[in-house]
Image (cartoon, rainbow, N blue to C red; front, side, top):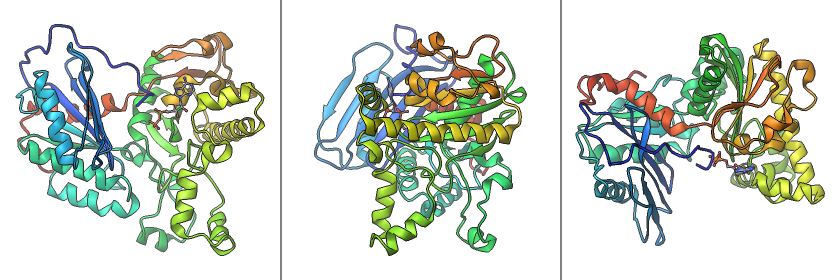
Length: 431
Ligand code: ADP
């Protein structure tokens, strides 16, 4: 993901001998892609990162970068399925002396998008956990099947190793019912498991904690509004380290204006498009998820391009930018009210970390709330967590680069690390 800071390079001289298993492989399996990182949890350093794209096509591509020395390697050619993809990744890792058969591998951590209400913590995968992730497919039809495929493939490759599922929704399971429930008929909602689940949870967890660290405080002592602004975008209100509200809902469609998703719309827009516009459910789904947001408003979903057009006086791009900012500001105000006291507002992900004009505009006019951005600090480009508000500001405004892979690895290792990665006695899962 482009939003991430450059991976930390391990000390040169190749992988070090471990006294006990300390490596974690993080897998993020999409429908036609697998992103991976191998980390050494003794110092959270990256040993290798890579990506397999276009799985199932003739032009699949594997890009592998060892960070223990050596260059990025790329191969293009058919990779039939996730099984073949993971085997190709294993071959690449083995070529760097980092093979998946290594005794130093403690666990494999998997990103799983939807954990429903049941998975509130990272969980060691067993048959019951697999069945529950499968049961959630109706609420995450695009993501959970691919995540499951990744887990099953990894299990077949290393059946002895703990496989840990880290859920995008888990951080949000602390939301009170008043925030998590929609105001629709309770029986219908419960029957269909309709509620606010929230997503990007590993990012919101990581960034809210890192923001506390930046302020020199314990997470329990700070209230933070986290703005994860990537291609997908979500806001969350975090009180004392626990999420109390978030902008994405049953699916990642609700909330902020995103690259290609509409975010909030009146639900009646859907009936109108059906009854009056003659569109099918699938067409409306595609419209709202893929042809709306910034791309629907101005034809571009990359904030760099939109800013370039705004600077050239392009009215359509200007309006798209203004709509994006207006929505963002509404959520900052709403979560300010939800939290009552706010210690920090943290910007993260591709847009949040890089687009100074977005940060400036989102906070402009909120001086009465104690929110001010210092122009010089905001203009600094850096991969480090940093404050962009003046020293004496009532509320800290921060840029905090997210690192979902590190968070998945950390949570995975915390769960299995103590056992030395043997997996013994970890078959239950703590769902
Ligand atoms: P995701 O993980 O949701 O795909 P990212 O967090 O990687 O998204 O963010 C991608 C987005 O970040 C791009 O679409 C682009 O709009 C934005 N972005 C990246 N770099 C910059 C930059 N230098 N200036 C403005 N926006 C940027």
